[in-house]
Length: 154
Ligand SMILES: [Zn+2]
Image (cartoon, rainbow, N blue to C red; front, side):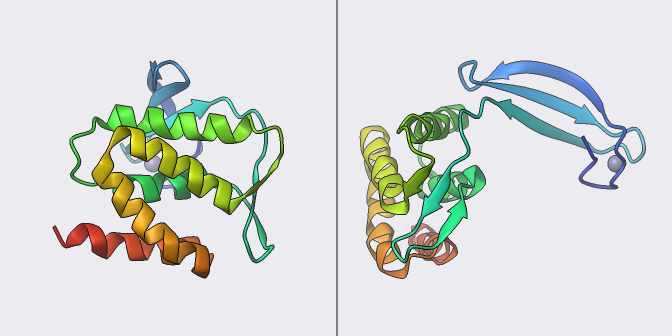
């Protein structure tokens, strides 16, 4: 695994342990060239998902984007980070289990909202209020940027 700081390819694994209720392996890595430390996660990927937007545009599903939007909605909420990781893995697992590689963006939004509504009402309301605009805009980056100010108001 290449060092994200200096680009050295010869990094070492210092520690590996199960994470997110055993659905992931968390590895602490060390770069002997620059002394940098970073963490990687290894997860099962059942299938490659493609997000189909309402405009018909397709793009590869990006777990990091999903994670970013959920973490913003969850900001300052009394939820353990580990619990959020589990929640995200659960959502991805559900998406992978739908049986289709093509997943409409609408379905993803609905699954996220349903999950958030069970875990944290405030995060759910944040996400849902922005999601309405998002469906019209059909643009995830815009979605995330709209979510951010709503959180900052507190
Ligand atoms: Zn390095």
